[in-house]
Image (cartoon, rainbow, N blue to C red; front, top):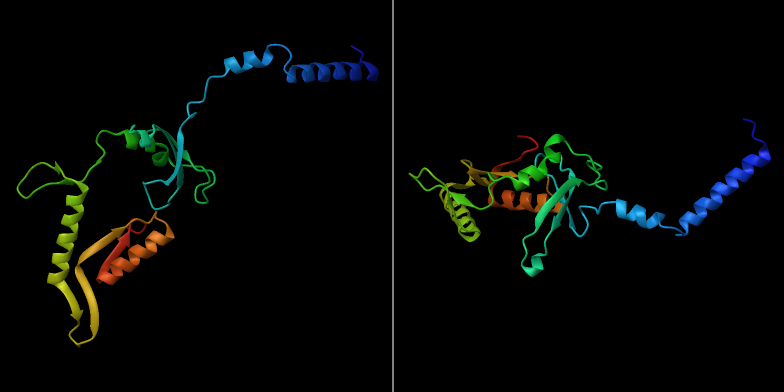
Length: 197
């Protein structure tokens, strides 16, 4: 088939004119196209940025939840994905991070403070107030009993060697700095995080 330059330009012009008329909303093309697209499952969700909980890489994640907490509704996480704006992972997640939604919805996940009393074979749920008070009391008693103010040469050392602290390496710099100051201020020498363990 022979196509002259004039015929080509006429055909292209007719195509551009037809596309323009369709783009201006003439006809039912736009309505049919909109009806064929299903609504996004993340429409109306709340977007929350967070850090992956699995390892010390500290990948950024975005969690999408539905439910208004201010109205007394329970918020349910519907979707978790990598944060493309995060400098560590740039939106990518490892297989464990990609399965975070399964961990959040797991029935075996610990959701509340639990205690197993001496001689018992089961854990019992306790309140956060009781748990934190118990931890503080046990730490205070241990520090009072085992604190070393001076070494054998009389040099002030302020050491607490019977208790250690495992911190989270995926925290912010500010949280890590405050944690370091509190732990070292209490005299603990055994201080580490999961990046080295």
